[in-house]
Amino acid sequence: MIDKISTLGGYIHEYQKSVENPQAFWSRIAESFFWRKKWDKILDWNFTEPKINWFLDGKLNITENIFERHLFTRGDQPAIIWEPNEPNDENRVLSYNELFLEVKKFANVMLKLGVGKGDRVAIYMPMVPELAIAMLACARIGAIHSIVFAGFSANSLADRINDAEAKLVITSDGAYRGSKIIPIKDIVDEALENCSSVEKVVMVQRTNTEVAFHDSRDMWWHEAMVNADEDNKAELMDAEDTLFILYTSGSTDKPKGIVHTCGGYMVYSAYTFKNVFQYSDGDVYFCSADIGWITGHSYIVYGPLLNGATTVMFEGIPTYPDAGRYWDIVNKYGIAQFYTAPTAIRSLISMGQKYVENKDLSSLKVLGTVGEPINEEAWHWYHDHVGKNRCPIVDTWWQTETGGISISPIAGIIPTKPGFATLPQPGIQPIIVDGDGNELSGKSVEGNLCIKYPWPGMLRTIWGDHERFKKTYFSTFENLYFSGDGVKRDEDGYYRILGRVDDVINVSGHRMGTAEVENAINEHPLVNESAVVGFPHDIKGQGIYAFVVCGDLSTGGEEGIKTSIRKGVTKIIGPIAKPDKIQLVRALPKTRSGKIMRRILRKIAQGDYSNFGDISTLLDTSVVEEIIKGALEGV
Ligand code: WT7
Figure (cartoon, rainbow, N blue to C red):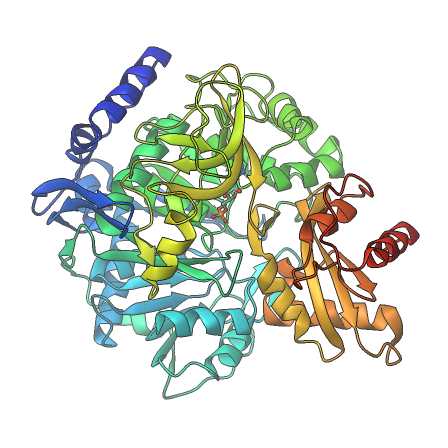
């Protein structure tokens, strides 16, 4: 088992060791896992090719570290507690023994379908236990899971399936989301019209929604499981074999398939879970994220289960049946650690105090946030009304790419400060550089957040595009991993994340590439051109503001066009990409060389109509004046 850091002095000591001799440090942590064959060499790397290999020639299976390693002591302990959408419906509690049995059976179902090591499996599912079972069954047989958040459109799903050339899709008939039922299988059917790699679809029955059934392709999960063999020997995996792919938006082009590998991801997700949340045996832990995002991968499934923890998986939404749902769950299961996003906190604040006031939250020990900077008001509300002034808040900075929490307090050990992710986790060596890549050392500095040394949980490549991997993360600044975030280090040496410095918008803790949204808007037949920027949004953190140049406005009028643009974006990407504001403009502000001056548009979107800086390269200043006038008239 991983030893927890238990004092501030202990953290400082561990951190120093992790920097002075990273290889010895990680070797010690990795020793606590079960390897079928130990590694020959801890690390082989350079950030120029780039090449990152951890635990070279080590052999393992991550599911043996979840199950076989824990069964003797924890077989009957709950592994997953599943809370359904309807509070009065029966929940499901799967012990380590029970979860293991389901995983082995579904692993055998997949093997029988001809899915094996290295094959890609796309998972498009609501938050039901079968989602966790499916991902662990993939890991068991060495198939690579690619989970796609079930809020994405058929078109986005198809892109991801095609990029990974998935052979199998696992899905459900429908999904409950509050009072709504989402026709999940219909979306899959639509996507699969354009996916030739997919041979089979396995479907969980959840909502009893009527679905089209393609006899030669589709099968029901429960039917396939009836006669499934209960024994399964885990596939032997190399430490650097791919465990999963998870797509995330970038500033340009289509989403990138972030690749994580078996050994390093296992060590890093487990280590950070235990330390950051200070998990102790017997605690019940609840992360409210969706498994379709990295937070769910690392901190609902892998991190907790690798530590033999009890993890809660919630199917529904925070406001159904009312805005007290999270607090009812905390009370029902006696949650000790609760992990959520600032946007959820802000939306609950906006619903009023009464939903949290009379709830018994005395089981809580640690609160966490992730996904975006947390504003002080939300921090204090969380601290005072949820944590009742006694629970430390861990504001955890990390990314799909980092695999696990990278800069964050260790609960109760590193003193917190509202709005600050505080200090790096052991093994993470942050460096702040200016625009030219010069290090800004010392305290009270602000610049680009980079990391100068590899850590086991970091991404290894972009699926099918190593060149893009190099270009995106290692080419902006030489020999450094560039996060895309701006950061400030204050007089105490604490880190405060300032937000993205690239063309990525953080909407409710989810990354949206502006180029992706623009491409979707430009598909509209009446749109000539568009530019998308973020603007401060009370609940979402950042909202999407689109400046759109249309041709003929006569059909449907302005409102009609805006509505159909929103519909189009929802169809092409999904509801999360829907612009909050659309301003129709005659032209976009461009330089003489034809480049859109986004800096100006960002200012206007923020409601700042001055301080545009140097505008001497602007082709036509009257365009800016017109846009300001339009913005002032209301969008
Ligand atoms: C981006 C990564 C990693 C889980 C969820 C998001 C922003 C993340 C924080 C935080 C300020 C944060 C960054 C980062 N971000 N956590 N605690 N404070 N910003 O994963 O979709 O890969 O997005 O989220 O901008 O680059 P993701």
